[in-house]
Structures are given as structure tokens and as C-alpha cells.
Length: 394
Image 1 (cartoon, rainbow, N blue to C red):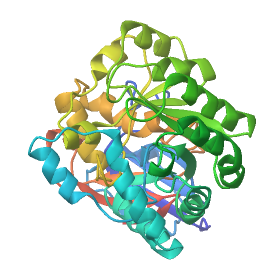
Image 2 (cartoon, rainbow, N blue to C red):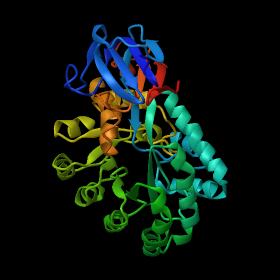
Image 3 (cartoon, one colour):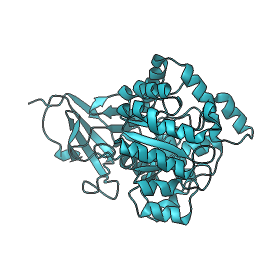
Image 4 (tube, rainbow, N blue to C red):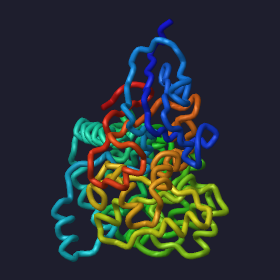
């Protein structure tokens, strides 16, 4: 009998399941393994000699290569127009990064058509998939008007897995001296227009953006409208963002580069995921967050690419894994877990980020014998094949 919509990946040298019940260690590693995906979901996983004896629609020979779950990129800004290459070049010459640079992208985004915004999202999602990303989150935040925030979300929604309303990214120029008025706009008419197109609400709580009280007001307004909370916190300096995240029960506090001991303890005692974005520090020559400090205190850590035109113009999760290992004191196994299962936790998803039974059949086949090579061989295109819900996307 042939399974409709089935694929068997056989001959896997090392399979990372992220399910300790299925294999060795926290990554649930199974060696000399196989995975069967039926109708988009994992139907069987284990040693290849025990694989079900049934005809399948597609048989893939991993030829000893490693397989990991599809990467879960839980933080992205894909709905924008233009680029900021000149700003990047100036920064590499010594100009410091600040949140204010976002405003140049706002001007380009407001001038772009809906089709152009959607095309940019499609381009970046495809680029991410080529390096193994199978779950993508996308924020608004470059429109900063009721019309432009709503159309940014509408342009992105058909092409990504999770959509986040980030009207409170920075204060647009026309509200420069009326921050409270802009917060009222975000929590009123803008939220009314954007909530139907989003699942999440976010706010940039940092120098040059919004303070703790304003961030709290924005997140609570979104929660009251049925959106779930996440927050940009403590990227540029120590501040109230992490504590606001814990207070409102946010799913994730993102960046968390500058944290106090109290911040770390608060994260460890909560269900808030600390999402680290190594591409941002790489691209701004800023200090990296100390992932080792967070992990040793018991904080759940995710890794994400933070693709945006200003401070982290990359969609490449293997690159982020390598940087996290090199500069944030993560082990290779911790970084792979954080880029898969950690990202799923940050999005409160149970169907992705692992290859347990019933999970979405998102697999990345590597031209390497082990997941360790993702950090061991930085910059090398190790991704051979990518499957999303059992369908080959690369």
C-alpha cells in the first residue's frame, strides 16, 4: 500500500530529533536513522533497520549525512523596502548604531507598493528556506502609520508562519515631540486596523524608542485585543524591557544584550524565552549577549536571525549558530537546539522545532556527518535538502 504524500529519509548518519525520549541527550540524537513523514507530519522515527516496510512517494538517501529539524526563525523584519548599505558602511567606519536609523527605512516602505512589500517578503522567505529555515516570524514596524502598518502585515501574512504587529518600533518623525500621542495612536486606531492581521504584538523598549511605561501600555493594549506579547528588550543598554516582559507574561524577550542579575533571575523564574540575535551584534560591532550566563541560570534561550535592512541583513540561521558558538559561549549542541526547539518555544509552537511523532515534517539534510559541523564549518553551504511539511523546498 502506498502512503499518499509520504517521504522516507533513510541512511541518516546522525538524526537530531530534539526529543530526549527518542534518542541520546537533550537533542535526542539517533544514529544510523530514518524518518518517515506522511501527509506532512512525522509518522515514524528511529533506527533505519526498523523503518516501516511500505512504499512511499519519495525515498531520500541521506548517504550518511546528518538531519536536523527545520530552523525556527522567531524574529524577523521582512516587510520593508530599500536597503541601508551606506549606513552599514558608515558604521563599519566608526559611526555607532542607534534605533533612529529605522526612520530611513520607514520612508522607503511608505513609498513602496503593496506588491513590492509582498515581493520582498517572498524573496527573503525563499532565501531563508535555502539555508534551512522552515518556520518564519515577520513583524511590521516600518510603516508607522495606520495605513502602512496594516498593509505591511497584510502583505506578509500569506507567506510567513507568524505575524507580529510592531507599530511601536520607533516614534515616526511627525510625532517626534508627541510621543504620548503616538502611543495613543498605536494602542487605538492602529491596533484596531492591525489586530485582524496579526497574532502577536511587540514593542521596542530601549534608548531612542519607548520607555518601560510606554512599552507596558502597548503590550497590555494588544493583550486586551487577543494578541500575544513579545518585546525588543535591553539591546542598546540596561533598561526595564526584560522586567516588563516578565510582568506581562510575554512569550519572548528579544536581544537581552545588557541584563542585570535581577533580569536574569526574573527570566529564569518565568516562561519568557530569551531570544538572542547574534546577527545584530555582528553587524553593529556591539557587545554580544552572554548566552552562557543565561543558560547556566536556567533561562530558555532561542536564536533568531533578526533579518532587517539596518542592523542584521541576514536570513542565514547556520551563520547565527556559528556566531553564537564563537562569540556568545554556547556549545554547538545548545546553539542548534536554540535555533530549532528554542525558536519554537519563543513562538509557543509545539508542532515545529523537533522531529517527534506528529510534528510537522520539517527536516534539513546536511552535507556533513553531524550537527556539530554547522558551527565547525562556518560559512560553508552545508544544507543539501530542505523539507517543509514533507514537501521538498530545496
